[in-house]
Image 1 (cartoon, rainbow, N blue to C red):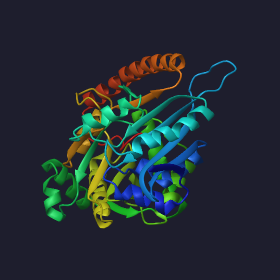
Image 2: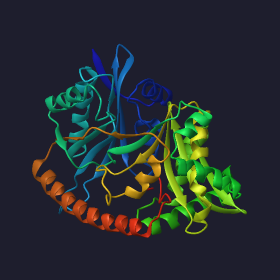
Image 3: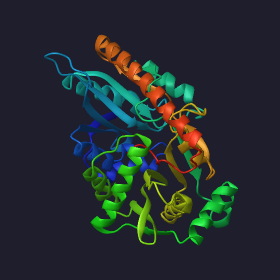
Length: 372
């Protein structure tokens, strides 16, 4: 019989996730701590069968982001969770049942799940059917970007480099010839240089970034165990690009990237990206996740320029299964959903304008790895 309990043991939680093919960084114990650092409430629900962990769900509680006079409502969210072995696992309904008491106590409007299941999974229909049988419905609007760019980094050395586009290989070597140096950041001054570059990139490409302390907290959570690194690309002692990476299991995520507005002719981001891939290989990773690219792969879509940059390193597009919503309060949910649709349409048009302007300027540099 499967039972549900809150898990407080770091090793038990991460040990299960890293043993599963669908375990994900955003379900990790550390990511839960980061959500708490931002002021959120979390629940780590584990499904146990005779003491053996067979399912996990990291749940975040957040207020509904529009005012309701005299009332306070929340929504429950799990990014790339829950993690269970198969669509017919008894752990799945047990975890959802375990959420119901939480939903009542937290005055939840909706439980929103975005499991780490690829759209080309051979059992995708069974997964969606399993969620629908539990009362969920598909939501076409995702919280976390559905599509990402992934590179299989099991090939080594020249074999890996040969998968890069020819111009990308040339840019890697050109950056080396021009004196670009890649080194690991150490100390507050290096971190300040990274964050200054992040602010420059944010202003240039119009995306939100968290406060500096949050980025420091990410490194605190992961770097102590050798699972995160911050790299700087320098030329003549000046930091001109930076990247933060996190490893979880046999995957590495390209979390945040930034670059200066000048010396872009040095192609520093290409050499930096190659060194990042090599770091992931040195940590035993099999896959390198460049993170978000446009859900619709058409010119002018948001992050199209980023997509063109990322695909030059080889790899493949991975589309996640659609968002699944369990609705507790239909009227509030419907009102909220309509507001989101309007905001999303406005943002899409604004971002499309930015992407078209960037294309017209002919920029080939990476704007950023992902919104920070």
